[in-house]
Amino acid sequence: MKHLTDPVFPEGFLWGASSSAWQVEGATLEGGRTESIIDINSRTKKPFTDNSIASDHYHHFREDVALMKECGFTSYRFGISWPRIIPAADRKVNPEGIKFYSDLIDELLAAGITPIPTIYHYDMPVWVDQKYDGWFDRGMIEEFEYYCKVLFENFGDRVKYWLAINEQNMQIVYGKWLGLNKPGHDWDKEKWQMNHVMNLCHAKAVTLCHEMVPGGKIGPVPGYVPIYPKSARPEDQIAAMNAEELTEKIWMDTYVFGEYSTFVRNYWKENGITVDIQPGDMELIKSAKIDFIGLNCYRSDVGKAPDPSYVQEISLNKTGNKGELIYTNWPGEYALDRNIYVETTDWDWHIDAVSMRYSLRYLWDHYHVPLIITEAGFGAHEDLDENGEIHDDYRIDYLRDYAYNVGLAIMDGVEVFGFNPWSFTDLLSTGNGMAKRYGLVFVNRTDDDLRDLKRYKKDSFYWYQRLIKSGGTDWGRDMSEWRDFTRVSQIASDIKAKEKK
Ligand code: BGP
Image 1: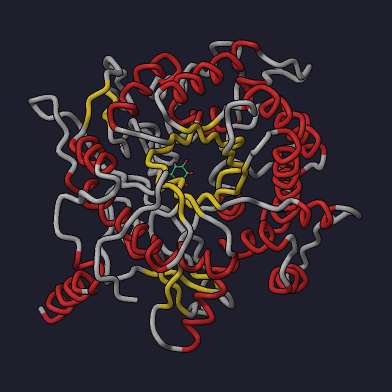
Image 2: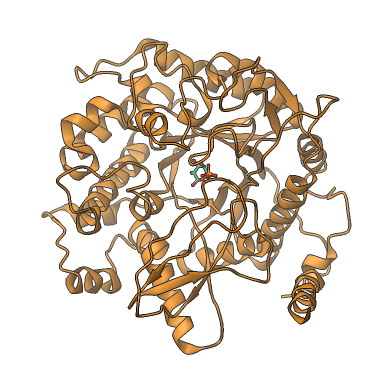
């Protein structure tokens, strides 16, 4: 559909940003908090970075919320750290942990900002991990339910929007890299058992939220990377569909329809995978109706028919030097590839604002559930210049194009109620620490030097402030190229010109 005007965002649209506890808070052993599995993972595996200080949001949260208010935020997505709430196996609730999040929530509400917490964003307490062998054990279901109950009891009076488990799909797809595998387990097979346990935990969170939080709404947070077929070759189309199924669709189908699709059941059968589905499990999953989908969408990928002669697991770019990423080649299933029609970040992530519109339309068409953007963002190497400033035009371009494409999806008919890009302040990247920054606000530290942790507003802060103030109308430049496709053809013709040379 060709739209004749700039998008109109609905009344009450939530403009904000997002973060997670382990990436921003620091104070990992303060205020009664104990260690989480991602603390250990981040310390022991270079280039992961020690998160014991992170952006020191734990000590700066009032200042950070004041900056959000100055930017005009009406929402903020953040993570709650499980080991801060329940630090030990005696399951005693930590009053200091409750106080920290309670104060944060009150500070946000006083600033007119809707709090949107994530219940689980990779920081499982070490004591839980040891007790249950991580997500492999069904004992997790009751433990997670207990944690959710504590959250709803303590914050449900003030928090109405909840996010259950961050990127369950990515935890299963990249679980080895995130440290979820354990000795003695056959990851490629048993990850599906872990996934089933996670689905049951998700369902418990949804059910409890509806029971305990008056007017409470809850949704999953898939990491969504749409897969375009590389060509019109029919085999590329099926390969792209396989990639989509095995990296994201399986999860969405379970959340929304409460079933494991025939695709995944056949996949398990053919690969000798057994999942312990006990009586009552599927009834629980089916009865847990989500209210919305929190969408994390940074980029797209390209799928093509795989080369049957070799296996290649994806090898992520860990240094931020373009061209290091090695794409998956999975015989019989799919291969991924570079999309020459879009640029990439220094970490080889495709910069593709249309992927945002595409994902929103795809998810709305398939699932008819309202959506909120819970992540999107531009990771870059950055430091203060001689004037103590950051001129992040590339991030402004990225956020402007992505937000505009959210607007176009709304004009296409998709129900979207908020935009919360990653991230507000700089925080630790999952894979690259402070070397890969995402914030609208610079935090003065590097991986090796803690400096003074002072906050500096980047140019993107001021750009976003103007956009929010205008209710999503002041883009700072003519955006019609996104409506009439001239931008896309421009990039394509640049590439054709490059190819001719
Ligand atoms: C998402 C995670 C976030 C965040 C983001 C950026 O998958 O939910 O926690 O880290 O990706 O990724 P990275 O930090 O690796 O650049």
